[in-house]
Amino acid sequence: MPFHIRQMEVSKPNLDTSISNSDSQTQTQMANKADEQTTISNSSSAVIDPNSGFCSTTKIFHSLRPKAPLPPQTTPLSVTHYILSHLQHSPPPPSTPALLDAAAGLRVLYPEFTRRVQSLAFSLQSQLGLSHGDCAFILSPNSLHVPVLYLSLFSLGVIVSPSNPASSIPDLSRQIRICKPAVAFATSATAHKIPNTLRLGTVLLDSAEFESMMTSPTAAQPRRVQVSQSDTATILYSSGTTGRVKGVALTHRNWISTLAGVYAVRSAAAASPQASVALCTVPFFHVYGIAFCLRVLAVGDTLASISGRFDLEAMMRAIELFRITHVAWAPPVAVAVVKRGDGNETGGYDLSSLQVIACGGAPLAKSVIDKLKKRLPNVQVAQGYGLTETTARVFGAVGPEETRVEGANGKLMPNIEAKIVEAASETGIGLPPLMQGEIWIRGPCIMKGYVGDDEATAAALDSEGWLKTGDLCYIDNDGYLFFVDRIKELIKYKAYQVAPAELEHLLQSHPDIVDAAVIPYPDEEAGQVPMAFVVRSSGSFVDESQVKDFIAKQVAPYKKIRRVAFINSIPKSAQGKVMRKELIKLALSKL
Image 1 (cartoon, rainbow, N blue to C red):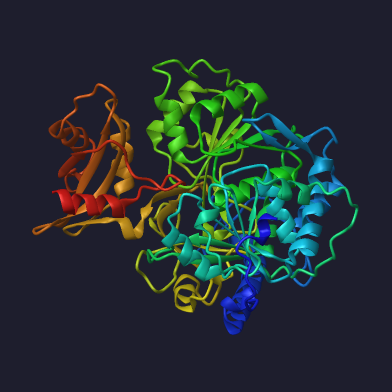
Image 2 (cartoon, helix red, strand yellow):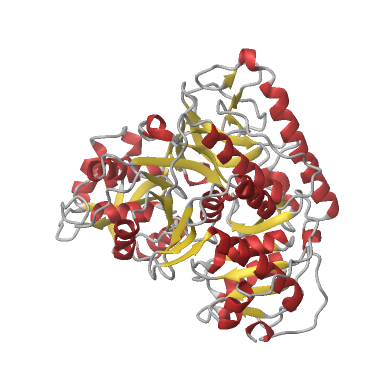
């Protein structure tokens, strides 16, 4: 069977010791303190501004959304059992698909979905021997199998550690050293990247054997595992603020708190929400994709995905054919949609079913939002803000009113607090609305820590449970968050700081420019100057002087573009973040 491939008998690691016992205890205490502080802070509602949520006494921004009740921290509870208990209490109609493969047209109805989760959990215990505290490394593109696998593993207390199937073998090796998996789940196309040293080998997700593990006719129940909410549920990979890869340990309580916020916002809606069909084009290995996947299933809606590599035409066909109501996009998808069609609003596809476009992973340029709204005037473009370390979204635009606020990333989600702190300041003193600074986040969604990296954990989390994000932002008088840029990516021009994102948004608004990225270029006199990499539109002959003049007319003198290079495409991560390091290397080597 596929999971016997590369099977070796080696000592079984207890993964949670990868974060030292003292560090794990410290992080749990900090999480408890964050919960307590949120409660204490909310009791000071008399001094909290009803519009912005800012407390003039503590200098903290509070969520003005309905509070999301959480189960007692000492109650053993996995995120899977949290979701299934809600579905049992408020079950969707039995004919509702839980999962939909929008390319193949395959559907898995909710009763079958819960049976598959249970059956696979039993098989993983009885056939594979997986147990609480093990880690499973997952290397697969999006498919119907992945959400079932996640929930089955969560229910057993097995840690889920997914990665990008396009990653190089050296990158994957570094991640495997961090999470120390007992088993890997891969596909026929990705299995060769997995080393043959894993204790339980590699399971092929696209095999008949795996299918039988999910659909076994036996009614055997998996042995109930006592999963603590403080147990690590996922290890995801982030460069954080230092650039080197780190394993972000998110607990079951982190994920439960995120879902509790979804339930609270949903129950506070004026009208009962209609069932939605939500298409996730974001990778399931990314925190955004996992969070979207769990949110959709937790409320009994239909989670649609397209197996394999992303294809724009396949996505447009799927929206039309399956009457998709919600989509989750990374910015490159939004850009691709507005750039296609040569003036035809929807490229010949009927997208009238669309209600909400959720976009996250990286900021979306104003010019792209304007074009989306022009092509799809009845659709809400809902941006959010979050990090892997915050279990995805902590600010979000919910509903027509919030999505109409131009350039905003929405408001604080339930149970979350935020501070805007003067950049590079160690005081931690918060700034009032409309002041720019580093945004700090606190709440039950904040990570347990970086696996095996106490130094990085201590640098990111302070003693009061605040996560220092490294992002330059401000919050306005109505509580909306506006992202400016990563602090570490600001260009230092003489005594001024220049945000690359601001210049990129302006460049992308030029009719002859498809895409653009701005980097710091070393300069003897100024220290650094802004340099633009530009992708021309098809048939365009826009030149360097025209690009420079276009920007110079719209910005202060110190923000001017000083160098321009033309390129075929901007290198970006799967989440749509510009890979500036690659462009800096290119600039220094070529110029």
